[in-house]
Image (cartoon, rainbow, N blue to C red; front, side):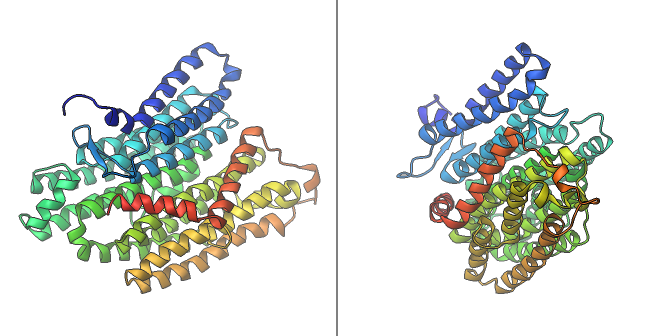
Length: 487
């Protein structure tokens, strides 16, 4: 590997700074009173923001030269990894804010340490160019998330969620590791960019590579909650602390798509004639099953879980397209999805903290109890449904455009039909918010107060949803730059 150079340091600068922040929080917790510990959320969010600014200033990959392989070719310093790193840190900062007022969570320093540890793993995963780094990063993401899902030890549903997530995660991880092992055995290398050269040479039989690819896809299918590896999501989302469920459904899913995009585009381009139709069927089934199972739900967290499954299907269309536009559409989709779904879970946290329930009935008369919160909820849900002028609309347009460009018209038509189904169950929730009344007609006497961290997080997310949907050119330009680094 040789001596350590400046580009090597800059490439992992976000991870180094997040590790320093993690250690700082560990020290601060020792010297503050228990009743002040929820302020660690401010420290975490502010620290991540500073890390993001320093990363943009110092650690942005040079645009005028080829991406570099660093640290023994374990990572590739490119715009794809950098863009996703920014998304992960943004999601972590907002999650830290929204967790501050959750009893048993926001006043525990361990929560913020685990959140940062998982975020560091996500950034390493986005840059990974080696099978070893890829797997180690995945485990660095997963292990803190297992703990976070079951973090509320005195809550049986949280413990159950953590245990289920651990069992299903360990199983899918083992299957994926077997696929990675076979891939190494067939090719004799763990470097993604070397694997493609061996495949081009024809040294490895076609059917062996497809077999290992299917095993790897099972592991990543669990990560992005694609059918049939989706069954863990509703129970885990419902039982986990709501901030953790929001982080799982956004940053963790984006991490899965980051590595799937790099893996399929970089290592298996010559097998696209086989894996693209396979992923197309998987995307079709995923979006359809997710939407159909979301229809009968009466619990908002379970509905958002099935909704996130459907959105995984939409985003997979960009992977199936196997083009620069397709990859750019996946990056843009993850940006809009993180903003929108974090806002949706932020509303669930706010209402659930006051009402003590996540059922639809808990949202009766919300428009009278808290007009501002109801408006944020309407914006978030219309964006999830893909309605203009919000970020979710543009995200679906670019994903569907990539699908049409690559000839998958049938998949795009199915996606549009599924989007119409999604509109129904999103607006069904809004019916409770705007049309139904609380029993006793006493909405004015039951206001829902927004604490400062919640208010700040929801304002930032709402502005983001509107900006991405209206002034989308800069954001799509960034997504295109990220995609170009793979092609």
